[in-house]
Image (cartoon, rainbow, N blue to C red; front, side, top):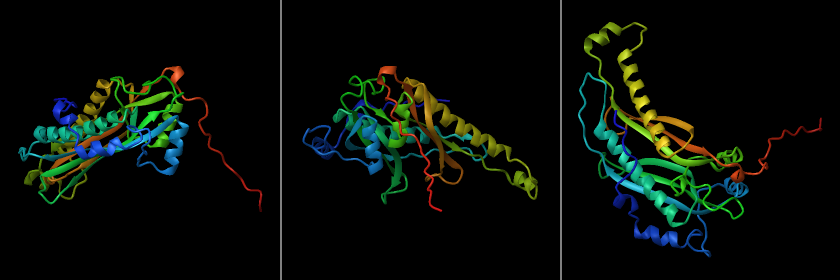
Length: 285
């Protein structure tokens, strides 16, 4: 059960298109007179300010990847490791480039990270992986400089909304990294005799259950390993998605994602100003 590396090659991870460099140079993070850009809603923008952070710029990372081929045995449950590695590498390249843009702006973190995949007309085996989010920085007076960054000193990444980010800070914790685990798995076909024996009967399809279980567990285990590597204490917002992509009905990807978090020391926690829900009852009859 290999734990695939989440560290792309240095030259690939640091590569940044010249057009992106020009765009970032005119945003608030790089130019005091620049404007910020973000994918935040108005409510999220206001809450971000109440949490003691300001948006710097909308950051993007992309990787167009050719996904190779791997043959699985028709009647055997097994991981397709070549495909798993491809899906890992492409996503991590996109994430690394997004984080490099945030570093360019001097950000403390990235909120609202979205990681999506899309295809073009060049061929089904060519996929683009895109990571987007809003780079943010703690306002002066919100704690010592860099207190909210990841343990490696770089910007944290998180798929939490601004509302959840606010509540996390109010609870005395901060995001560390958007973590993921993936597994592309070949689910065995049933033989003709197996299908005939099951016809008209209620019974568990054990071979399918075992394959799905193992694939999901591999994805979750790898996500947890990334969290441990990032020196986090836990993961919130875990989600496991299942997709077939372009490999056929019996080759399936299991993708586990979440935001790894860590506890803050007392002096860096938000004051007790978290808004409390209220219920208003009208007196009109």
